[in-house]
Image (tube, rainbow, N blue to C red):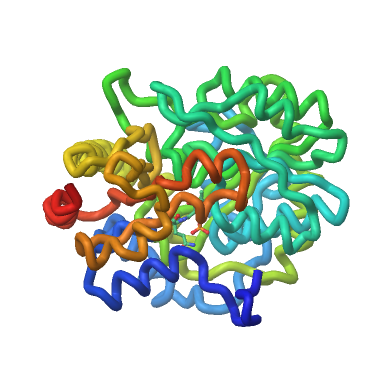
Length: 393
Ligand code: PMP
Ligand code: GLN
């Protein structure tokens, strides 16, 4: 986790945001909205501070937020976690994932992820001393899809946890029920626990074939008892800086995560918890989230069309904040080198997709010339970025 000179190595997101700040380029690297979430939710946090929610809250999270999370799982997916024993509030999804991996695996165990994978997965699997195996998603005319053969090859009798992510960062793939059934079958055969990162659960984006359905793998037959489901308020509510996340699943697994969480952060931010509890139950906020998803779909189209016009080959994402674009057609074989030069060439910052792959893997080789761009920026900002990118041609 350290740089070659022993220094703390910045995450690719911090590095690219610093590059944007230094050069004045438009930051389409790190995925965070440039417009905040609903004012009513921000007001609820201010009200909570004024009302004195300023000391340590309960370790598992305040009861009203745990109830709101359980209600959310029931309303949206027909899942019935017990708010007192099967729901844990965490400091963002990042902590939920880290605490779960640290709780569930150790040296000798394997954690299987899709590849490319969100960067914190590799770091926390390494911290746990476990081995990180991957199943590459394959580029197809339908986007990046699960490859059953790659998945079968990645499983072994040491696979303890499958760390899944749908909607998927960085590809924007929303895994179908059929794809999830394949994962479920292998997890059951190998008696593996599924840890599923669903932070973009509400950010599925309508396309020609309608709006893809987000399916939690915990809803598949026989899976609730072996699945920990993770989500977060950051993406759903456009408050990424609040860092309120959660995990739900069977009591013995949630208890294991809670045991680790106690010694990572002890508790999570007091005033944000009542605000998120309010947000999860409020119909006005739910309508706001639907509008966000609709506007993200049109912003996705704007950026995809602009990237295509600039000479990139894009795979139109079905969800998340991100699109992957191949620069090979523009004559750039190395996406990382292009990302370093992009501020000077076009005044835009992106993230090389190799930040989400293992050096030398098949996905790494296939995605070498690819760049991830975010479209969770105001339309005016995206229009300016698209104009600038046209200079690449
Ligand atoms: N998982 C994925 C796939 C993400 O994209 C992110 C946010 N960038 C996280 C987890 C982290 O979420 P949080 O900010 O709630 O820790
Ligand atoms: N999840 C966001 C991204 O993928 C940013 C998260 C971070 O900075 N760690 O860009």
